[in-house]
Image (cartoon, rainbow over all chains, first blue to last red; front, side, top):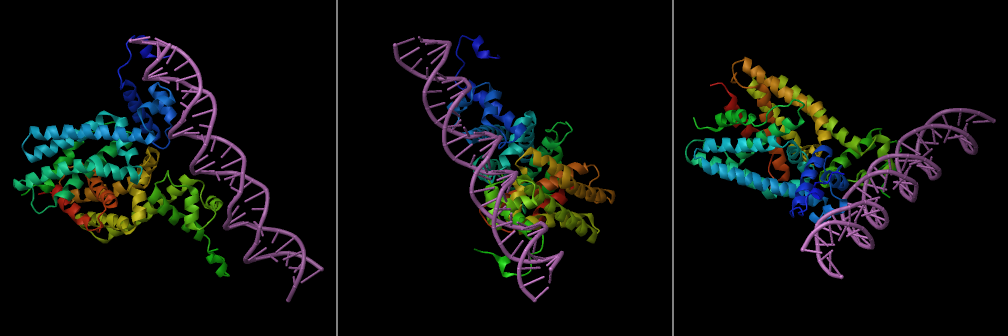
Length: 204
Length: 204
DNA sequence: AGCCACTGAATGATGCCTCACTCAGTTTCG
DNA sequence: CGAAACTGAGTGAGGCATCATTCAGTGGCT
């Protein structure tokens, strides 16, 4: 039936199928949950045969890991780039927060996978933690410490704890947004969070 | 072989087995994750036969739900009781936060189930959300609004968002504590969070 | 013709749950 | 009082459905 490829005489570029499978997996995982998702579902959604999935991924778990790896890398790159654009530590944190919520807000399925599915096992959480998540927290912490040295933020605060608080608050906004029936914009929540957060950590 | 009951001439009180199964399930879920846990594992850990599990619970999922229901009910009762003991809204929030982290910090396995396993599916999250979690957030929000009316907290803040921020920050402390290799006390983190939080929301 | 991306039916493992059975303890009855 | 009948909590082997993964085969392309 639907077969876009058959309309082209040029073979689809390598990675085309891989991309389709990844996209399909994000959707299927988001709707059914990782453990309730069948590889066959992903294959059907991607418009390929079951076996094709295994030409691109080692296993079902490898698919989830790939989704995570790619997204985290993209997010970290974007955040680091954004941070270089401004000099004020407060503004840097605001940019990080905004980017964070914009990304998740732009792709609900991906957000569900991130906020819900990736947390469904300590095993993944450990990798999650070891891999990109720690780096992300470190970026927030470093930015905060920069502000402390500049005398902008209270020097008696533990930067590590501060970073977790900001991340936790943003994370909760994202999770709530996913679970909420109401449809609202996620990104603007960043400002409300930053308002309270910055007010709490700024040196008088 | 091992059969404590055979040493007693009195039949073990009803609910004894049920309690044993719940405890075993918390441990097994915490160590292997919900989906990787076999009902047989829980039965073995509880010292009962596979079939016995089904005399007390409708299904494997019902066990998880029971763990959640009971714990949330206990936590909410404790928090509500504590809130009545003090009058200052700031102190109320501090008590709620402290209780929150004390509870999770006192039972690592239960904490893992709560912070990790219960979030592993949108389905559970929705129930989670609908059930106790929403009530918990509402308690925080109501307390904050009380403080707003008393002129203690900034009146231009959305109490709903504020509640999510506080919850998110505490939640992140708990999740980090679970994943951390280092062993530290969780409860004292409450004060660090409250310090920043209250500083951020207090009316000047 | 030869290559290789792709296919999808077949396979084998897994694990939830059922149910026919056991037996310690209790009640009934002569 | 003792034996027989009964009860129901507890047991655990196995039915059965469910999938992740494999691999022999297909067909388009050079």
